[in-house]
Image 1 (cartoon, rainbow, N blue to C red):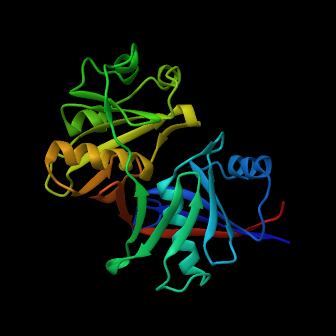
Image 2: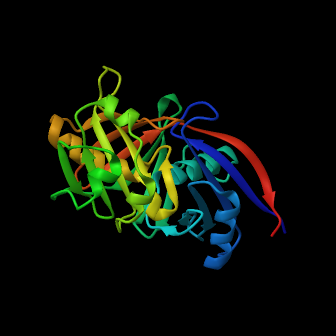
Length: 266
């Protein structure tokens, strides 16, 4: 039977902004090779695959066109949005997802935003690895840290973040998922800006990265002395992520918009 599949622009209130995610709702689990092939066919930064459990919660897995990942914010936000939009979940119901990063939840907020409850990712101070700053095209950095599977690099200004043109092939030589580059915002609307380059996961630049904000939130909370902030990911598409540090969890909130509905016949 045809399988429903959706494309959702996450962390954007309007179409063609934010980060597009595939959302595939399955009656029963499929094997990894099939899911990886579908994700490659969709050719989006992540495609989410959901299977409903008997208790009403969902098993959730995420695949880039190249690999499976253990945490993805925008495709989780997109998944929750589709569950409510299609009536699979009532508007008042919490979406609950069992993932490789534990139980994740999503709730609808006033104003149309969706709030995700994700694990906090602590950032460990390190010296810049050999070649990292050169691959980013940076003569220096204010700070370099290691949030689990990535590097985090703070630079002097928002302008540097926005105009960065890294050597993607050089970044791929570093055995991490990706590199977060961030700075304080130059304006009053946002607390910080960032970009995320993930050639190690098959994505040169991710438009808006929820999982990166699980590290950006505790890092900027430490720097700015705030627990509630707004981040802007300054990719070509751009996206806004509201973050709130809550103990060992990070609340991520943003809008979502379905732009494509179809059926997968494979």
